[in-house]
Length: 492
Image 1 (tube, one colour):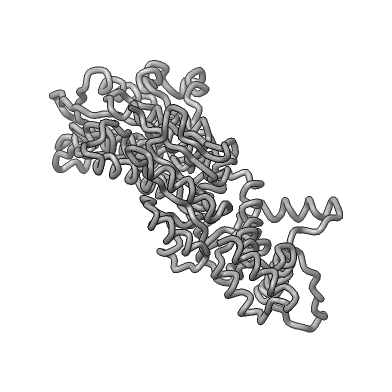
Image 2 (cartoon, one colour):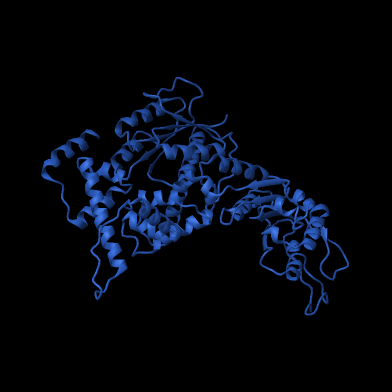
């Protein structure tokens, strides 16, 4: 039976991302919105993801009901950073796991899989469900809720089990090599050698000897024989990066290898048989190069037995927030950053940018945001604009100037006199600090000084908000104390 996962009271964005990931991993993902939740319909869930971030303690009634079923249904509970008491109570009531949000979608996927399989083992047997291969830790290209990307993942996972050549297309930075290595990692050749050759990095003569090797005396300086990359990749896989840059004479030799599985070294007199799977990568539109005589049509059709086209990031903008958070979680500890969440203003700026460098450029942008302490003043407007490539602020400033509008988070600054010295970093830091303080106070007033709600609206953890208030020496007004206590106590 195919596992059926119910998503109950899960944030809409996370639910969409999880649905895509679960579906691509062999699960049926169903978002349940009925209230109250009942279990009298089919198919019944084989596991539940239960969000209590907004619903609070009352949501645990679903947990209690699910654990009373026969057999009991495993439940993974999603809690907020300030909901430790609820997490403890959920575990006492039988929750399989409690995950503090926001969480990496891939980590959450692994938790759900583990909960599902562990429950089946406890029920008295091994799982009868064949799960597709797990995603590699570095496969950011698969962190997606985009239908096009999920379809691409499905094709990649299916073709991985075969030995046919694959042509992987996509713009620079889209993740072509990640897809290629994923295919190899989940193929029957996974324990064999994978060799990468960049066809654009070497001159024609050197590329031929690099691919096919040479015999002693084949040319001046060939004092010994050298095996080529195809020989080294025998029984394994070869990644031909920038295949569109390969010269026509080498294209013919490559076609011969694909068709007959043999070739001759430079200066060689005997054919060499190899068993190599070819994965070709390019950012060029090869079908447009064929009429110009730049690429052989027979080689194109031979390589593209299966063709995988990775869409650019600008055509799947719904993935930008998820990817940005993924890169934050992935690089934060290694870079020694204390940033726990990406501010809303930064996400908004990321969503507006065109990303000519695609996923790789987004990853580098997040890394730069994490490692520049003078920009990480915990203020979204300054940090987000500064962390983006130069094109974005120019565009934003031009738009604001043309419309007479003020940029988000802008603060009026008294400019120095002609003889005064000025530090741009200090001005940026002061403006950021002031804008952040005003925003935090505004949100606190809107939430009647409920700091838990304010932290969620500001997209920061509860502890970070308390630290800011302590730093600014801001205390809750006396008139608000009683109402806040009442609200907090009623939500428990």
